[in-house]
Structure formats: structure tokens, C-alpha cells
Image 1: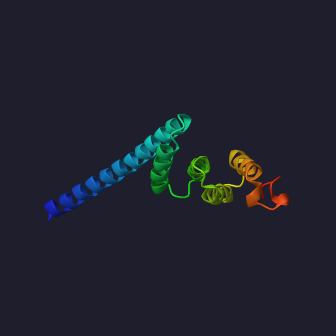
Image 2: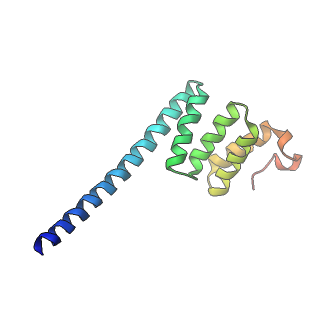
Image 3: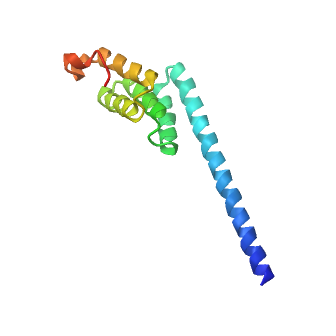
Length: 124
């Protein structure tokens, strides 16, 4: 009976360690994807950047910063409708983030054909 208690305790400890390790790996992978994506974007390698931000989004779904970066990449690649949706989603998730709001405003000004005239000057 004592062996069973020790076995159960050992299994619990192993599961806890694996859970923590998985979380650490998740964070490291997310940071790696973000870092690579930023370097690729700075080099003008938008498809590579987009791929890494998509992978980051799989790990941290609905992160406003990642959604904003996905929007930037899609805009750079000419997919303005998807970029529009992503910029707007990022701002909806974090409406107090000035950088996100500024990026959406800049997008609206750069693509007035997607918005009625009264919507290009401010972000709700």
C-alpha cells in the first residue's frame, strides 16, 4: 500500500514537471517565432514573416500584437481585405493600445477605398 502512495506521488510529480516544461517550451517557441518574424519583416521577407507570425498565432491565439503583425504582413503582400480584418480585430481586443489604434488609422488612410470618408480619420 505504501508503494502505491509513492507511485501515485511520483506520477503526480512527473506530470507536474512535464506540464511546466511544456509551458516553457510553448513560451520559448512563441518568442522564437516572433523574433524570426521580426527579422524577416525587417529584411522584407514578408512570406517568411507571415509564416512565423501564423505559427505564433497558433500558440497565442487572439494576441492583439500578433494579429497586428499578421495584418502588417498581409498588407505588405497585397491582401488588404485580410489585413483590414486583422487590424480591426487587434484593436477590438485591445482598444486602449495606442500603437494598434495608430496602425489601424494609418491603414484606413492608406486604403480609403475600403472605408466611407468619415471613417478614415478616427478609430472607434
